[in-house]
Image (cartoon, rainbow, N blue to C red):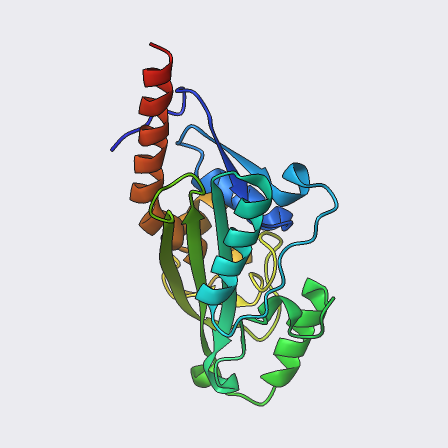
Length: 224
């Protein structure tokens, strides 16, 4: 299905305050008639729902349901994390809070490097995972679509690159053109082809396009 970006805009709420995610998702959805609105814009001062689930799916669903209930808007939520083999899958869903509840990216990266200081290069395998939920509060059947995207790679020995956010400067993506650059060293166009978030968006796209078309048809019917 093809939906020209010149068509009437469909407003979609992103259940997050993370500006890096907002910018990345806007780029990934740029070819669709979507106006992606942050939680900060829709509900100023309202905190994001607590990420206290055990799995990425639980956290993404919690965020989607809370935001959709508060705004009655079609909502996109995600939970993503970094799984490092040598750390038994940590930091996992606690990637943003690896060094503490209010840790900065720099603090999280420093702790990850310290934790892997004695780990050989061939044992530094890791992956980014992203679970996305599209929730339509107006749907008769609950309207929840859940998808996942994964990007395999390994952890570098030092931060490299000036782009991205989070752990991008430490994550060498296996699907990079040369297999040696971190996500932060890639142009946005390349990162947005291979990242975990890009793959989750690709999996979600058919459901999102169908929902936009359904809403458009409904609006056209009311206008007759």
